Structures are given as C-alpha cells and as structure tokens.
Amino acid sequence: MRTLLFIVIILLGLQPLHAQLFSKERLRNLEDFDNKQWSWGYFLGLNTYDFKFEYSAEGKDVTVNKKAGFNVGLVGNMRISNYLDLRLEPGVMFVDREVIFNEISDPQWADKPDRDVKSTYIHIPLLLKVSTKRINNFKPFVETGLSVSWNLSSNEKNPDDNYANEFRMKTNTFYWEIGFGIDLYLFYFKFTPSIRGVFALSDELVRDNRPDSEFTGNIDKMMSRGIFLNFKFQ
Image: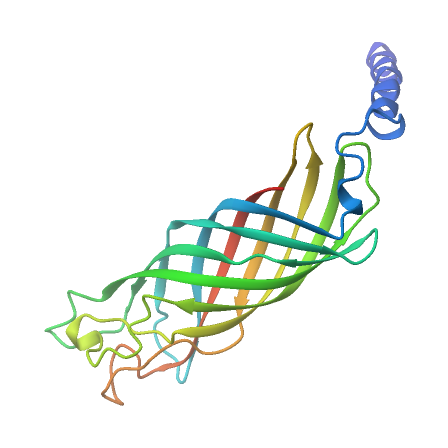
C-alpha cells in the first residue's frame, strides 16, 4: 500500500512538469527564423565508415576496422513549406578505415594482409527535410536524399595495386542518405544535432591487375556505408 501511494504521488507530481515542457506555451527564440525563404550555416561533426562486401564465391570475409573521422561543411536551406525544406550540405569528410584480407596464401603477402585506407571526400548531398510542428523551442525532423562524392585519395589512376601495397578505389560515388535530428532554437542561433546514414549505390573497388588476385579476385562488389553525427549552426 505504501509503495502504491508513493507511485501515485510521483505521477501526480510529474503531471505539472509534463504540462510545462510539452503543453504550456513558452517564450520562443528566433520566432520568425523558419519563415525565411533562404537560410545559411555551417556544420562540424564526426563520421565512421565501413565497407559492405559481396563475393563471387564462398570464402573468408574481408574484415574492416572502423575508425572515427571528421566532417566540416556548409549548409544552404530553401524553405518549401512549414514542414518541408530542401537542403544542400557540401562538405569535406576525412575518413579512416583498415581493410584486412583474411584469405592470403602467398607467403610474400600472408603477413601483410591489411591496408590502411585513408580517404578525403568532397561530399555533396541534396536532402529533403520533413519536420514536425515546432514545439516551443525545438522541432524534430527526418531527412533523406541523394549525394555524390569525390574521393581525393582514391588512387584510381595509380598503376600499382595491392601487390605493391596500394589499395585503389573509384573516385566518384553516388549515395542514398537517411537520417533524423532536432532543431533547437537558441537565443542567437539555431543549433541542430543530427544523425544520418550514408549508403553507396555502386561498386567502388578498383581491382588488382591480376584477374586471379588473392586480394580482389573474389570480390564482386565493395560499397561504402557510413554514419554521420553532425552539429549544424544557422
């Protein structure tokens, strides 16, 4: 009975708090911000990239050790309606991955199966942002769209391959992206933390010069996957 009475008291005490946070209208910051046709800003963030491999035949999987990277870029936003925005976010992504080939039998390379794949991407996504109704000083949203990137460290034109310790990728890649976040309206600016998944739509691997390469011969497709944690300031 005491426990039940304690729970009832707690629930009764939470009702005013719930009403204050979600029901009571409070003073709004930047009340006219979302009425602008165009708005601008920048973002900083972190990333972690992986590879998805598809194989021509059964064998040991290629392992990828993911490492944290860094994002920086600009934000351009075009208002379509109260709940829809079109957003362009060009940026630079610094990405680090370690690829480990687990099926190397050549004695010369069996003790060197890993490749440190450092990439610098010029990344340009075009996103449709779908927002909820603004609640006091915050507004959740989801976003999705397509993007293209240029890998400045791809080694695509390098004549050397994995047998010379060079891992090669295609320079241009297209992606599908989807994510969510929340707009926080502060006194002087709008702050937006968001999480977004990035999925390559095409094969990125440049195969070794030997068709029977133990490194790339069994790989049918290699496609990047990534997660962005971005913090936008507008």
